[in-house]
Image 1 (cartoon, rainbow, N blue to C red):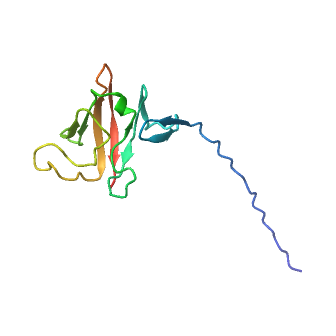
Image 2: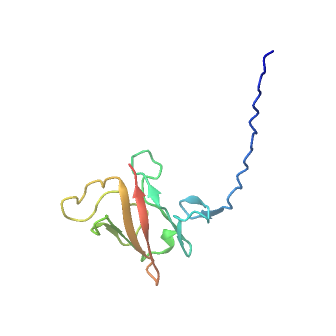
Length: 136
């Protein structure tokens, strides 16, 4: 007589709780923000993207700060990992495409993939610092 062993593996269903989200709208952009995402920087009504991909596909091709159009005296300064300024704009108009606009050997050239750091001043009384990942 043969013995047949039947192993039964329990099936476990995992239910993922949906993160609460909020939609932030500006005149030109709509962004869904999950408050528990640690990389999303929010300052008053400004929402700073932490990633953009200027690869010419018309999706995330410029660095976006939602509601920046409400701050006509704003400025954005972007640094590479060595602390060199690679981009400077005042006012910032959501138009940085990953190109260095400063002098030196990389002036006018497309910046390479990587993490960059920024300093944003809203033109009134607040500054924000953070990081931006650029992926072509």
